[in-house]
Length: 148
Image 1 (tube, rainbow, N blue to C red):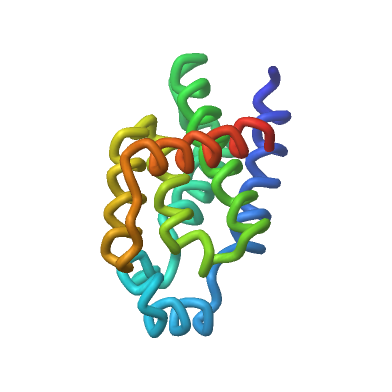
Image 2: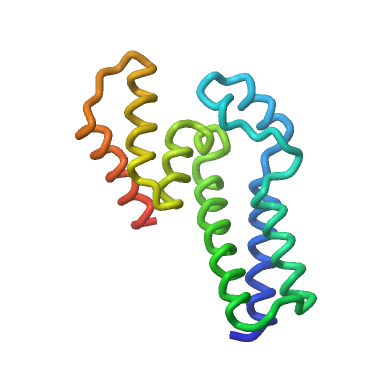
């Protein structure tokens, strides 16, 4: 793949990040909502936006050492792309809700932590849930991610 082709795809990634960057109202609403307050954005720019711009500029300026580094850049871009498209589909409030946190854990291959988090969140809300039910929920969510 040519560097110019990669640069064009990264340009699309920066555009997606710009379109899905939370507004000041989004941030304010997430901070005021008890379901999203712990995950609410507390920065002016998300880490995804910063990284997308950095890797775009790095490729545009030819500031990388060979195919190994460019492959790492492409992997990071794919991760941001998937996450931002998920945010585009569900919105920031949903993303920072429990499901959003679980999705993030699944993308980091932390399925056990995702199950624990889901189960604890349900218990904290006064709902009874067993380990089996929590695992089934997380498995179903993981399957949805695969089919997207």
